[in-house]
Image 1 (cartoon, helix red, strand yellow):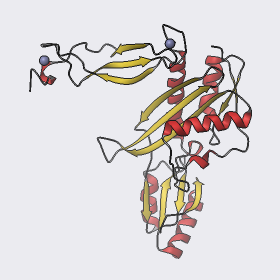
Image 2 (cartoon, helix red, strand yellow):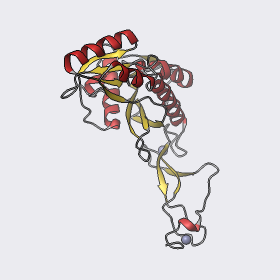
Image 3 (tube, helix red, strand yellow):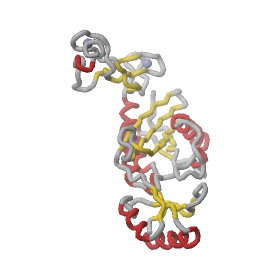
Image 4 (cartoon, helix red, strand yellow):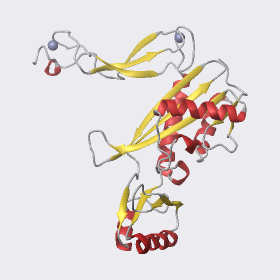
Amino acid sequence: MQFKNRKMVIATMHGKEAVIAPLFKRHFQVHPILPKDWNSDLLGTFSGEIPRVVSPLEALRIKCAQAMKNTDTDLAVASEGSFGPHPSIPFIPINTEVMMFVDLRNKLEVTATVHSLETNFNSQMIEDLEGLELFIRQTQFPSHGLILKRPHGEKPVFLKGITQEDQLKKYVQILINQEGSAWVETDMRAMMNPSRMKTIGQCAEKLVSHIHMKCPQCKTPGFSPDKPLHGLPCAQCGQPTSSVMGWLHRCARCGYQQLEHHKGGKLLEDPGYCTFCNP
Ligand SMILES: [Zn+2]
Ligand SMILES: [Zn+2]
């Protein structure tokens, strides 16, 4: 399977090519290009003007397909981010990035996911300029942009991509005068958010490493860890426990599977975690 000298569209209008293009050029000698007059926001935005209705993987497939059609190419990369509370530490925000590589000519689809706690994801209702001062200190403003919204109803966007303090204060004051308060939130679009751009770069590196992994049976690229496999055997009775044994690699083309044990990890579980030995 050959990627060399082929055009590869990066499905973005938020500057993600800065961290994706150099990697793919170096590893696969592709020619990265961008779609023209294409609006990925139609698939949903972080700031909520257009709600997201499809799963991240489905959104990525649609983005890749649209970008390939737009540029008349058969190779694409797209990424999709989401933000929310950490699953086990609710007060800590987490950024999840999923990235997809599609080769239409060879019917290949490879994905990678990265989670990062390095995010400024935050929002707050602001009643006065002192409240604004406190908020912007927690958001890495002005290196990271902010979004200003009207405080009521669906909170319509007032202004996006704010990186000037005087401009921010001016418009917050206008909203407070008009509506009593202002809703301020971090702008999570890649070009407005260096923390997120860094995580997208890490995701691109992981995706590149996944593409390099080839199926031992049919040599198809993308023989990457698919999902964790539970059932690490108990050291005492040998029965499967609920602990993770390793990662399952599965070839989408020929179905060949292989288990990758934890690197340097254990092959047997402590009987203390076994429901038979330690009910
Ligand atoms: Zn046991
Ligand atoms: Zn295979």
